[in-house]
Image (cartoon, rainbow, N blue to C red; front, side, top):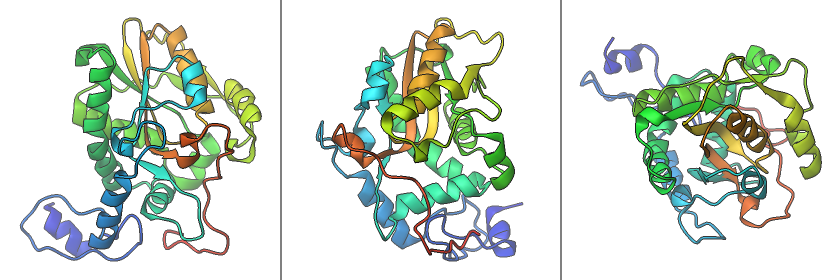
Length: 270
């Protein structure tokens, strides 16, 4: 079915504010993901400067302390997750990605990530794409049942399709393991993350540069634990990829905020 017909029968909503998007007729083309106002805010947030390297965040590859300790090659992201009373556009998109099995939003974010990921690969030895693999941080089974989606898997799948890089489900979330990361302090996050994942049997990443994908990175404890497992499976380097990084990562030693809906705010998606 053509995009115009789909938007007429099932009017799309903005992935950030929930506003009905304008019907553009039957000319075809991709359906929009953000309303004009949210799209302007999104582009503005991508230009936020990293407090460590001074680059716009979508060009920044600075690692968190955890990722540095795990030997990761670089970390690309699009925006900073910002704590505050009025959630900015990127926070609302992350809530939507986590709570809604929406392929359009994942495809949009994958398209936004494609060039930063390619730039990261060039800075990490420029391996041929045949030697690159995508791996995602798996979500807990309970969360997948509750929301109907694994946001990191959906994002990695969309990025795999755009780049022509194979997606390898190398990691398994241990059943009932660990506590929610957002409720823990930095040291507790590292200990908890180390128990949360294991390698899938017969995973072979020898000679591969791995793009490790998640939706948001705070301290980087989960990615660091996963990166260590992937290197154990033979990966020559691990490059970290996320939609958002906590802005506290610009200043080491600051406890990151929790990713949650603001108290008393009822989401249009619920």
